[in-house]
Length: 515
Ligand SMILES: [Cu+2]
Image (cartoon, helix red, strand yellow):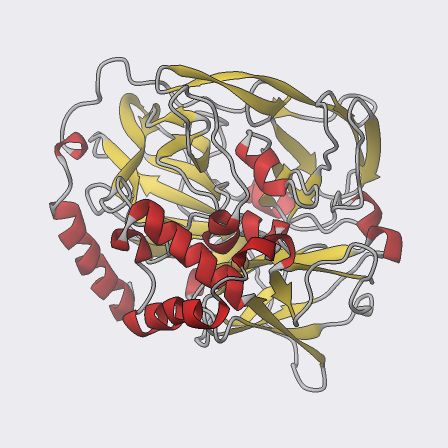
């Protein structure tokens, strides 16, 4: 453990010491069991069938209309083999258009499922692709322009697990739903009648949609009983906007074994693990002592996201060790992650993420009006003055202001018909993504590639963020990534690069590009 980690560890213990009583008490009566998504493998014809459908789910004793793939909420985990072609038949039984995007998969633009891959209401689409990338935990979700936030909030998300021979050799925990456990974490705002209360408005366009109910695989603070020994958690932050900061309630370590696009070279021990929207990390946790422990999320410094109940460590999942012993191991080394190539002479592109000052001002005001000053966590006092002073300059124009194109990249809101540039196939490029001049959290995601982070928000990347990634943190400073695209993406099916805070994406912070 590095000194930096030790300091964070001590700090986390301080927070844990102040945990409310739920953390120490036995599991509540009637605590739900963690739902485990079905593992779905291609059939004898290498086909997988997905149906996008409406149904209902019960959260906190009330029933809500929800959407899912092959079910009421979320979707199955698709298990794919490296080098093996798969055909996915997607049927859309919703009464509106959707798309199915393969987040983290290096597949051609034509099958990537971006905003141009529309499946009409009642219609169908079939895509065939061959994953050639390393073993990884990826996911799929809608990418319907202007509607992504709503469709994900309604419940549309599923996992894609890619397997390869190298990862098969590792003696990691591999029993699905037993000691290899997916944990899709999402927050939802529920109305008084229990329905999902989604709005795309000036407030959510500015800070994102967030809610007070936290779900793990669709259940409120469920429990999972696991053999004692090493437990593998595949964590996905599937929230629309909320950064999660995972920890274990007794301060024990998590050993990170994989990031978005594959395994790390070796495990990285942490006691806190911030995960941005869209990101995945796989961690191993030692539960050989037989003591129950909670996976929690600690407060984060992000506007609107430290409101109660998230001003305290918040429980995600109770882990209950069983008497039987697990067989998986924590290896000392994992896979070969290649050294970075020579960076001289690469094509460099710079992207500046920005929000219209009017949206910034109106969004902050709406947040403050609804929740008071305590919602403004994540904003320095000086910034707040800057935001609020906008009132003086722009007062009176609010009525005509259109927030739907108020988030921008290089001054432009997303235009589906005009990709901004053409990347060269098979060539490394250095992309600089800047959030300077803005104190907003922007988890920046790029389609069609697993990249390497060269610098993140002005600093060298942490050890566990130095492997294969498809999302990088941009939060008031500059981040640099090394990208390479190995597939075509023509104009009609351009790749996307965008903020994965879904309401920023839906209101323009996205660009298309071709390969
Ligand atoms: Cu953003």
